[in-house]
Amino acid sequence: MCTSRFNIFNHSNNSFFTPGTQLANIAKAKPDDPAIVYISPKNTESVMTWRALEELSNRIAWYLMDQGIRSGKSVVVALPNIPTHIALAFGIWKAGACYVPVSDRLPRRNLLEICGCVSPSLVVTNRWKPSKYFSLSSTKLKEVCQEYPAEMPPDTLAVPNLANCTGGTSGKTKVVLQNMPAGGSDEGLRAWFAMTGMRFEMRQLLAGPLFHGAPHSVAFNGLFCGNTLYMPSCFDQRAIVALIKKHQIEYVQLVPTLMQRIIKMPDFNPEDLGSLKVLCHTGGVCSPDLKKEWFRILSPEKIYEIYSMTECVGITSIRGDEWLIHEGSVGKMPCGSIAIRDDNGQDLPVGQAGNIYMSWTENAPEIGFLNSPPPEISKDGFRSVGDIGYIDNDGYLYFVDRRSDMIVTGGENVFANEVETVLKKSKKVLDVVVVGIPDKEWGHRIHAIVETKEPVSDKSLIRLALDYLPPYKIPKSFEFVDEIPRNANGKVVRSTLVEQYIKNNSDSNGD
View 1 (cartoon, rainbow, N blue to C red):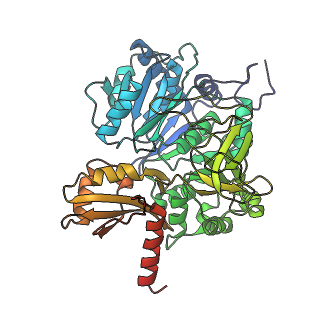
View 2: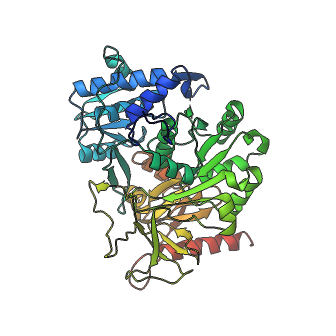
View 3: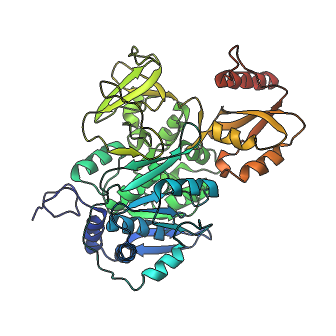
């Protein structure tokens, strides 16, 4: 028996572990310890132990396999952050199937679009159920699983293990497959610890939805490490701070918007966060000013930042004390290389902004694209998703902006075209352009410039948009014009519109 594994719960001769074996080993080591502490919308707390999590996920796996859901099949999970969601994910992987998490508030047309793409064998949702697909609520799922065995089914590999759903360049949902087995290894855990600051058996707070890439990775890697996962049903800044203080949370991953809202609380007391050993942030631009504010709350070596993308073209990370030497950087790629190139694919000099290209030198993730082409690969093996940045003399990456047609607001990616298409459904709207206005709280605020043929109100457009879009994609401000400005080629230059908006509002404010 191997006794020198980096993974403290793995005593086998094989470094790799599946979710099933890791969960079984942790449940055996501490069966009655809390795996998940759920905080409901009414602020009541309930505990799921490691034994209970393992047994429920086993019953779910047996049920799924009894329904023919095994390797090559997929399950769409449109559930909020609840313990059953976690157990279901483990059950899907134990059955060898693919876990497809989506927002529980996804508009019907988007849910149907994703289902049409992945052809799920089961949709689990507590809201609207698509009639063409076998669907269950989380309560019904637990009910039908009661008679199935609590013992773990034969171990299997879930390949592909995950399908991430994100917006494409046209606003159409893009489905990205992880064509790798679910689980991890000593090597993977070491790399994860180095990038994120995580350690074994921490008290961890989940402050984001499980259908998002970063919260998903942090949640399940935390569970693989034997962490107790505190899982609130909402992500209000006051609730987050209160939970950190009450439960002496050691690890949390936040988006910069939440970081901003926390420090802007009028009665915020930095001592309430005194238990934190690590804050890892991703999902949006964190300004140097905001980062330095957090350095005054937590020491720099406790703050980690990650830059990545759904397409898994590459990943960088940086710790706070390292950031102070390379202020504004998002770090280096630990297992690969970064190049900055112009639109013709030519390398640009140090310090000059251009398209970010990345290439894995080892352990490249196997990624598939179901309904969109993969990022083009250059002759020397580099790929880009269109993000803009530059590198310094030491090879550190500095992120400048996302794709020109994508807005990152509050950690969410919003494609302008998708919002424009919805607003144009109004009979009173002739044309519309959606841009992101720099905003201290949101990173960028969604602003709609609307060309109309007759008067239309903000409220009527918001009501229209809410029929098709989730709330975070709704414009926060509107500007009504007689004609949308275009350049000599008849094209809208979004950057010019943003600059003009800032100038006009600065002038009107007397700045």
